[in-house]
Image 1 (cartoon, rainbow, N blue to C red):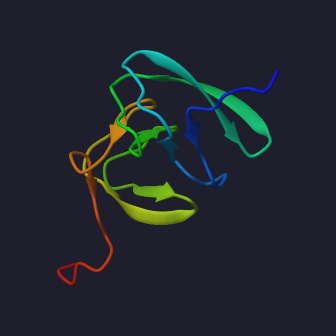
Image 2 (cartoon, rainbow, N blue to C red):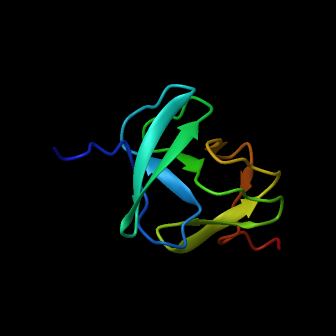
Length: 97
């Protein structure tokens, strides 16, 4: 039976997964990361199209999605936590940094 994945990770160096359907808090999610299937407990509600951490991310660390840096963490982010504007600062096209 084929596993149904509720989130995707495009590149092995990504530290977030993008959800393809809303996920309720305290839900276990299986992910395909390279050739491996990884199970992560999502701790918060994650809306469709949003991200959650698949690795510990420290304050100031780069957020990597689809193999590209999309921002910097503004606080420590634990595995399974929602990653969005409340804890991510864009580092693209700002002109102020």
